[in-house]
Image (tube, helix red, strand yellow):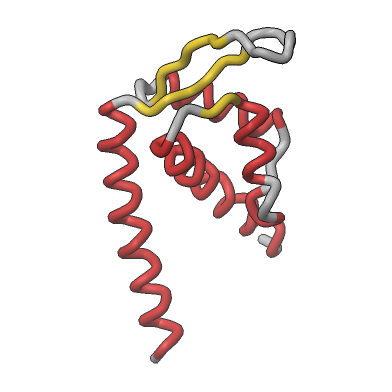
Length: 110
């Protein structure tokens, strides 16, 4: 395994976590999620990665969606919001993330 493949594996789970963190604050539409993630090179992802992830989170009941008309005359946008089940999942992810960071920092400090 090389570093690129390792980074790819880490990125998949981290993207899911970051998307849920974002949507827990307010509803987002897909392209807006992609643009926000692009602010950080390490989180940058293509539509072909983000939209299947959003569909899976919807299917699993962690997100819900709704359509909203735009004021700019553009087509309606599909917004995603977090469900109660999604908030529970996010809380569990935050707990595990914190445990992971603590363990890694502990190992680095030894």
